[in-house]
Length: 308
Image (cartoon, rainbow, N blue to C red):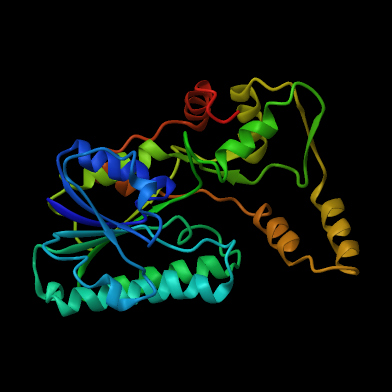
């Protein structure tokens, strides 16, 4: 199958690209101008790199030629200005949908759009990044084109330099304390990147699927304290986890706010007053998906030592 893929130079996208190629699919991978070398180590006879910019409609002409699927992972993360986030995540999706219409793909029965977005699900803690991702999904769902949404929660795995590696490094210290600025009872359900990719691959064989949403998370929620303790164990650390009660953390944030902006601190505090568990029933029942527990997964990820 010919698949147009955005976000192939990212963490999840890289794993998905390699798996799709290994399964014999033909991949047209989008790369921003100057980022083509990010795919140079992705080996596969079916790989073609398409240079284009999601904010420039003219550069995207031809990206969907002959495609039966568009798998859309690309988005701007919250480390860029809001306008750039909107232009790439929302505007880029609008450009892709317009390109699909230009080619008549909105009328093609064999064409589908699959979106992978980790910010759509979860408790409603505000961030502009989450807003842009929700709008992105709504645009696709309202496009008239058959769609499927995969909604992973906190994704971890080998090669994740943004989240997994820094956490493992921090937890690998042989002594001292790791201070948690809340009581640690809030539940998370991290999901291994290989399990995310596996769910997407299983969906290829689900012939009854159309206009579906799949939440992708660990098999059950675990308290944040357990999340940290299992990460320390996987990293071989000797840290002692210590918790600061929420009320004291919030009082500190209040005092800090008298002198500087504490918006991010307040959002983080609000996030950890809620549980972040997700219903993966339909992925398990319909696709036969079996995600691994976090303790098992993080031990596998840490074993290679790549994060040092």
